[in-house]
Length: 163
Image 1 (cartoon, one colour):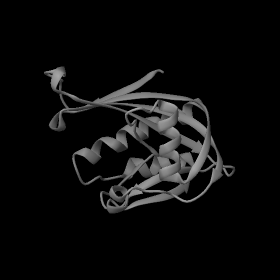
Image 2: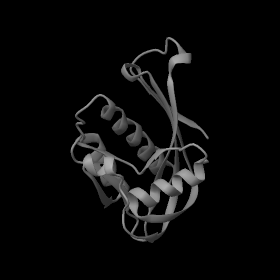
Image 3: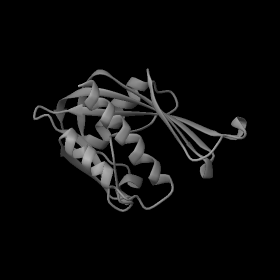
Image 4: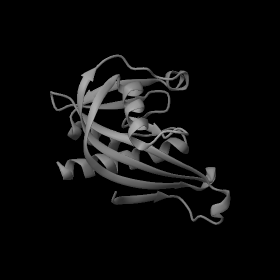
């Protein structure tokens, strides 16, 4: 998978102490050409559906789980958008996110986790152009949250370029 960009706020000094995580994300289109976007109301930012790959999961299983939980959907993956590496120096955190394109095959109910509900997750459906504009205007509250918008905005712009 092609590297789209790296987002970092410092240099890695000791790789052996890093907390490393892999995650999957999806930009999936329904029959009306709308994509699901998660608004995190209590942190004031948007994100594309996705999350960490749990132990014992591969990318495909993790992606299907995240899409089901956060969008209430099943989707057919049709291609790759790319990957983005993030380094958050204040958290000593390094993440690689893999993003895919897909088509919604069925819609159901979201299954947000307790933590996601506490953070005010809300599912929205919009065009990719509207999503790009919303992400440009986000003003996240915290340090951790400030990495999500640039990452997902880069994924959205790359997906639009691919399409």
